[in-house]
Image (cartoon, rainbow, N blue to C red; front, side, top):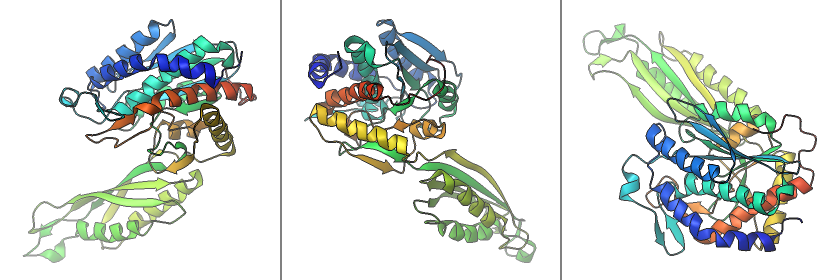
Length: 397
């Protein structure tokens, strides 16, 4: 039988107390990026959950970031879906004990509740629901748990690159926007570093012998800020500067860290060229600028395939009794990496939440069951709709 809202919603509602208890346990684990004990403890919790249900478990070891994990279930359908979430948070060790998960009205408030432990749990429960209620509605489902999304996704990138070719589409379990919107486009982002080298001299005795690296960088900063709007959606922000040693020394070194964002993949190269041209232009005689860094995440553009997937998600929301919109955002996530690998992807499929990375981060309790149901129903409908039928690649992990 085809999966329906009438079968799915009661099944998930019965499991809501267990979901909330699990969220409390996960939010009690400090797992800031780079804190391997916390990352591995979070992974062990999820691994035990998956093992108890007989799911296949694959580990992606990383000595620095902590191990990534992929939990896989096979059905009798065709569609291969990768559900991506991350285990790391931004909160320092000690936060979990100081601010355990609590209820405030209809909200569940706690560190990482929305970003992304609620999303991780929702992925697990959606896959469990499909496996129990409609195994004919999918071919392969894999919940992928990354360890370093909040910093640079170095380890996660390698894991996703290894897995992506085996799947037809990806669903990223970042929290929904506060108004319930899912995310169908994300800007690409990166950081360029400009290091200016001048020549030191005594600022009072012989300033003419010096080459002021800070002055050169100041001219470059003005030019960099002027790149905002170079193309639609392009933003440039000089966010960190440093230089000099003492007020009576002509500074020989200066540095700037520059955040860049672009809405379309074709805008990345022009931004890079513009930054490099500014660095190459001599504005203070004798000062030399080296550029390093660059783009970390490619844009997730709203392609026709993503648009089709968003339309299908809206139809599923209608079946479940609520309306759904999709939007673009300037932040980056695993969706950028997966879109850059050529996958159709939707993001923001976790519970509705807000105040991410802050002391009152939350998810709306009333959104948990409907959003898990949305993920499960979307997979079932995409399978029936023939989504990704022509996509090549071996069966999932």
